[in-house]
Structures are given as structure tokens and as C-alpha cells.
Image (cartoon, rainbow, N blue to C red):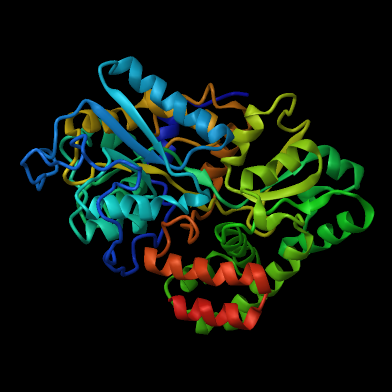
Length: 455
């Protein structure tokens, strides 16, 4: 297909506003932490990574001078892991003297990483860097001055000019630039197995809104042996993000912005409607949903044992890694019904924690993560588009090229509750508890009260 030059793309994208309202909510500092300084990784800090060389690390650059770069992340599944390795391969080519200490904290949507990282940062034993969503997810650290300002050391003029304006805003929730975003994911995707839908005579492009999708689930359940919706309930985030898409699909983005602004009681009927529909959806998920991960559920889509998956476009990275499973002929995607003009965004970033054990290596890594080379290597494999506007799209494939076009043509790009940009971490955590309970009991009244109380 014909492509515009990176310059033309930049002209269109640079001032596109796609995360309106992401930084408007108040938040709280980190609560007290547990643990005795073991770093959460099984070490006792005796390797000097706790900054115990006599310096206090208070300026973020003298906690140590190790050439070991410890990275904590949650990319351990399928295409995500492949993308992370592609990023590390590029970094090693430029900095072969830096030894990377890979420290994964598996758990969908970062469910395991928060406690590991927060305990270590508070205890003065931070990793070199860690994966985190920009925006509101950063505020527990910025409120306590636990992230260093990298506005001069990393964000030079060339980099600032290349990044989308609102991504830069998310990287500085407290005024100083503290994060390097590396990708943009779309959350409101509905993936499907083409053959399964063809056999059931279902056209995904004709589904009329969230209620219409329920009707398709009912048809698939009655007429096929496949699971209508590959969905996990082992962790609450998948149901929370599905509820977000149902709400936006039924009520629109303006109502969603009102919701994340805290006016839940003013939207009681709308909130309850989305909860009721989510409860109906949960009748059509795998019997073992409570014991599988999202990528295990996605394997059922690949195998033809499940029809649909609602997930961020990181799921496409798993499809890319699968053998003989091609875009459009074997799998495809439509925006979640009712959200065709919406590009709900999820972003990952890396930061420079205070008291850094390897300041020079960390600065080198952050500079690389913000480069064209890094984002050109990482994003096609990850299943995301780059936040820089000058990354060539030649290697991104048909699916991500279509996502890129959808991003350009979208009317609105709201932040995500389940992925840390829309609400303060304390609110997100409370909502996850509410949806963990909802996964088990589908009690709409209790869930509504939990949402009200969360805000």
C-alpha cells in the first residue's frame, strides 16, 4: 500500500490530542511498604545495588556506578517477550559493555510489578529502571520524589520534537520529565478467528454495539462447540478493561470522561447497564477462566477453540509469533462494537529511579529506548505503534499499518482505567478489587457500590 513519508506523518500526528483528561485526577503517595530490604528478587543487596557505597543517592546519580543494568518488567508472554528481546538486542549492539540483568515480574497488566518495585524503591534498593505506564501511574513516585528529572540528560530537543505532544505530557505528570514512553497500544480491540466466524455465518463488521455482541455470543454458544469469548478472570484487569469498552460502546467517550472524573452517581444507570452486560458476557467465557492467563486464552483463538478475544493489540504480537496464522486470512480485528472512532490508548515507559545503582548505564538505556532504532525494532513485534512521529512504518505489517491509520483517523483517544493512565493508582487498585469480586459473583449492586466507593 502507498505510504506517506515520515515527515508527512509527523505533520499530521504531532499535534493530535489523544489522551485528553489523563492527568487531571488527584492522587496519593505510596503507602508504607513491607519487607526487609531483600529487593524482592531474592537478593540481599550485598552486591552493592542498594547504594551502600557510602553515598545516599539523593541526586539519583551517585547511588552507584555499576555497569550492570537491572530492568524489571512484565513482558514474559509470547510476542511481548520477543519484542523485549528485540529491544535488548538493539541496545547491546550500541552498548556491548553494559551487562543486562533481566528481572521479570510476570503478571498480566503489571499485576505483580507494583509491589516488587515500590518496596525496593522505598527501601533505597531500586533497580536501574522499570516498566511503568506514564501518566497517573507515575504519581506515587513523583509525589515522593523517587524519580529523577531526565529532561536534560535524555529528552534533548530532537527527541522532544519527534514525540507526540501528549505523550510528552504523560511523561511529566508533576512538571519534570521522568519517563520515556516507548509505544502506543490500542485497548478497544475485538480480535477473532476468521474460520470460526465464517463457519457460524457471523460477520464481525456487522455487530451492532455491545448488546449486539451478546447476541453473537448466544448464537455461537447455540450453534458451535467453540468458546464465544476467550477471557481470563484469574486477575481482575481483563474484566475491568472489558467493562470500560462496554461503557464507552454504550454511552460514548464524553460519559466516560465524566466517569473517570469521579461523577459515578450521576451516571448510575449507565454504569449499571455496563455491569449487567458484562455479567451476561461472563456466561460465555472458558470454564477454566479463573485459572488461565490472557495469553493462554488467546491460544484458544489461535487453535480455533474460541471465537473472540477482547484485548489490547499486544495480542497481535502473539498472533505474529504463531505458525501459519496470518492476518485477515486466519485472524482479524474490529474495534469493539460501538467504539469504531475511538482509539483508547495504553502506553509503556521506562524511568530513572532515585538512588540509581547504575546511572550511566540507565541513562544510556533510556536514551536508546527513546530512539528511532529502538521503537522500530520493538513495536512491530510488540503489536503497537510508536510514540515518535519519525519512525518508518515499512516493517510494521498490514495490521499495525491499519491501526496506525485508525489512530490518525480517530476522533478521540481516551486513557485507560485498567492500564494506569486514567485514574490515580489508589482508585485503580480499589476498582480491581471490585472487579475481582464481580468475576466471582456477578453482583451488579455490590459492583456499583464498589465503583462509587473507589472514586
